[in-house]
Length: 250
Image (tube, rainbow, N blue to C red; front, side):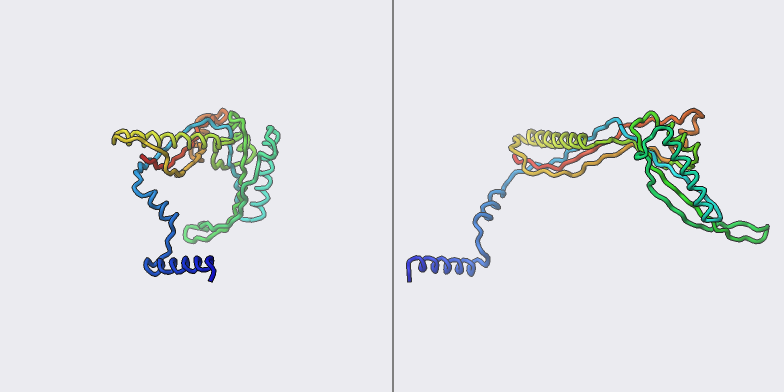
């Protein structure tokens, strides 16, 4: 047997003996890594940040609702009113791409009606609902757009969202601020314990959220009831929030 074969035979027997004695294969690099992490002194902190910004985009959700005992009549009347609203908005100067049909529904329901003082019967009605979503960057025209749509035939304003056209940069900024807060907390804790932060051990994003400011239907009705003048719509700031969980070694 050659020296090379003898060496490999000996090495194989040695590995088998180790497996028999210890019950598992020895992985030296993994064991070393585990030992390296053992005894780490860790401070875990939570950082959060909240930013506000002025909206630069408005989205108006409105609806045209029609009702009739005939499905065809409900649909036809709805189509006529929806077309009037669309024409009015286009004539106002809104681009066609800024006016979208977000949903269309037709459903039936039964309504109890008294035929006379003693008998009662049910009448079937059909309701057609055409919802439109209007976008504009001219925030000072939102009230005018709503009034114009209502006069043309829209009979339900679902909501108005005041948003950011590009919230990405603010979200990154909020994450940065949350991370800085987590580090400052860890430094304060370490200083109080007479220690010094050495390095970042781990970090993960907990949450990053962006919340447009929304005016709901009830709020809009209250605004519209205040005056006969163009509906006053004043956007408030939108919110961007971020939070992180970090671990620092000391």
